[in-house]
Length: 380
Image 1: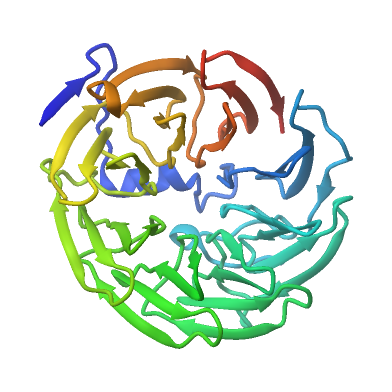
Image 2: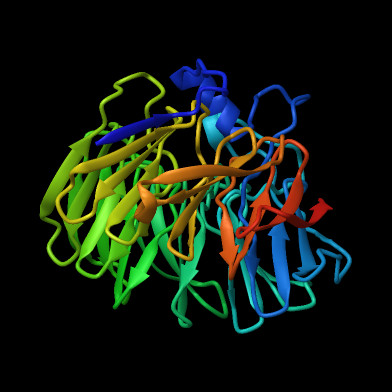
C-alpha cells in the first residue's frame, strides 16, 4: 500500500462537533446563513439547481444562462433538522439530490416537504412527510417511474406515488435518515443514523434484511452487481451481500481521529472502491477483497461524493480544490482546479463536464474534467 501526501496544503484541525456545524452550514443563531448542499440534476438540455434561498433555477447546460425566472418556493417554518436548528418562516433550504422524471422535478425540502415542479418550474404539488411538521428532509430522492423514495429525519423512509405524492408505504428505522436511497430490481437500500443498512421491498416496504455497522451512516450505499458497500461513521467500510445482507468484508481505516468519518458516498472505479473521508484522506480499496491499496492525504476535509469520468476519479475538498485520480497509473493524482470556495455538495458528472455547487458563494461551476478549464459559472 502506498500513501501519498500533499505537502503544500495546510493541515486541518477539525473536531467532531465543529465539523458537523461547518459541513451542515447551520447555526441556531438566526443571523448566520444556512447553506444547502443539494447537487444539481440535468436532462438533455438543462441543469436544475435547488438553491439555499429556496429557489429552483433552470440553467442552460451549454453556457450556464438562466432559462426561466427562478421559482421561489415557500414552505413551512419551525422544523428542527440539522443539529436541531430551525429556519426562518417561509424559507426552504434544499440538501438532498433532486430527481427528474417525465418532465417533473422532485425536490426534498428542509421544511419537511417533498415538492414537484413541471418543466416550466411552476409548483405542481407538495407533500408534508412528517405530520407534526417538526422534522426535516435531508435525503435525496430516487424513483422507478411509479413511486419516488425518500428518507426523513423522523427516521422513516417513504414511498410516494409518482403523480399524487400520496404515501404508498413507509418504513421506520431507529433514527434519522439523511442518505439518498438506492433502488435496484425491486429493492430499496437505505442507511440510517441507527447504524444500519436496510433492504426493503419497493412494492410494499417490507423488510428483506438489515445489516448493522458500529456507527451512524450518512453516506448512501453503493451497489454493484451482488455487492452493496457502506461507509460508516465508525471509520469503517463494509461490503455486504446485496441478496441476503451477509458481510463479505470490513475494512477499518488506520487514522482513528475524532474527525475520521466517512460522510461522502464512495464511488467504484475499475477494481477499486474509492472512499473520501473527513480526515482529508481518499481511501482506495480492492472492492473484492477489502484490502487497502492506496491512501492519498489531501489534508483538507472531504464531504462531497466524487464522480468517475473516463476511468478517473474526480474529488473536491471542502475548500474547492478539485483533483483527478488515476487508479490505473499508480493512483497518480493532480489538482486540476482551485475554486477557492466552500464545497459540501456532491459532484455531478455529465460526459466530460463536472458541475460543482458551492455553498459559501452559492455558485454553480462547470469544469471540463479533461483540462480543468472553467467552462462557465452562474452565481445563484
